[in-house]
Length: 633
Image 1: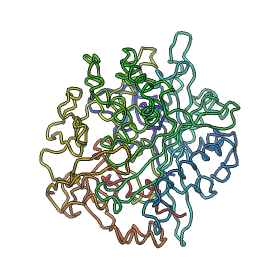
Image 2: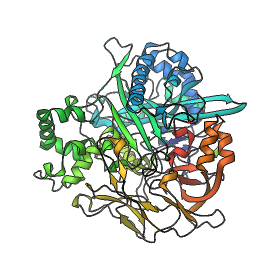
Image 3: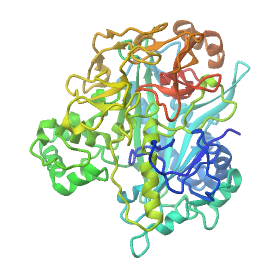
Image 4: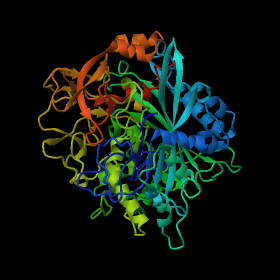
């Protein structure tokens, strides 16, 4: 089986109720009582004196497979029935009630986009195949177990939550070729942990997550699910407080259709809770995510939300990242879009509702994070579902799981979690350590897009607004406006002072956002010279363009990967050939930017595994596991 990680730090999604999301902590930050169990990818040495560790993320496949065998499959937790494929799952009321809503969302996307469909040969825009949700050829596999003790402020009667993350996948034959892949759909089950003791302490709950560092695989699963393990109480299918969170890539437009944007993709974000009878699930309000359309139609409700934000207790919680916006303002459906993150209005619901000037009368002096009207507006947006999922994420996700051993490099991620999670890891470790020791913890969280000690390649940086004055770049880097929209030039990204290296942007234009994401545009791009081979452009799927090199002429920041030859590659898929064959025949080697957990890619790129095992930065939809098209139907 493949290797996944157990990280002894706090891990999962900072996206509140919207999606789950480790990597190594920032340099110079001590992480108490923390060490990797099993195979960690950071390469850090494990001190032999450490005998226990705080288990806050499990991605080891042998442990997760053993957990599923011990009753922690999706079917058991939703309906109390074991089911190994979606055909069997669909016979149970809980799962069926979930997918019925997602099927409506897929149909709505198709109605709004007449060019969308499931066939590469027939449809210019590629639609999620809703039949997969009921197909016996596909199933959901457990790819992550997450301990979110740091979510304590979001629960009145629980010590945070635990999350089990399942991802859609398949294994089948196509034209005599064995194909297996995951798909861009996760279902996360979020369950409240046990309550604090009568003194309000969560130390006893934390103690349940302290494991013998030697535990791996089945022994780890046995401990997690044993009578004294952390899964014994919360993770049961009849738990009335379970929240099911869906993140689904519903449609993707190839770069050939939107060459200025380097493509376009949309993600449905949903939350579900059990109904009054406890058998079925119904859509639930999404945490901190306003219903933009309803609020625009009701000036009175909009004013009420503005007043709620302005009240000092709420403003304080927004600043520290622990606010909970009242449900009367919230939506039950969110759509996030890629690429270009916060340069797109669809990912910034509060910016769609308010102007920064509406916060100019608020006292923001002395705030930790929201220190200017622009920073407050950005702070509100990053606490929404779509905001979180489009900041330093992996193609709209924060936890995708570690690929099994044997997964072809052409369809394999180098890192199973997002850059944001890597940067937030040390903070979560400190919160856990404080709670485990019975101390009061500092639950405040910096911006999801800017981790402690950040400032290297691709980091988000301030362009002059006082709210981002300390978002500086490390020596050797400068803050570049990159593709910031004209209506918000407050944040850029850190790029080398000497431009044109491998991985650097080479075709940059400002984004013109629109409330309708289909009408977003990138202005005429300014060409930037590359030091070596040339520029892979927006038109072939590289947002902002990317400087490449020959594999025979690699600088220190480069590694050898592959780039698809676009037209031959797409024609191969359109003929119905297995995507592995198309990759083998129509991908050329190319020098790309090297990456790992400590050297992230810039926005809109992912760290994929190259054939030699290195990490290389490529556009996310070059990996089939991150796109809805090209898979067997």
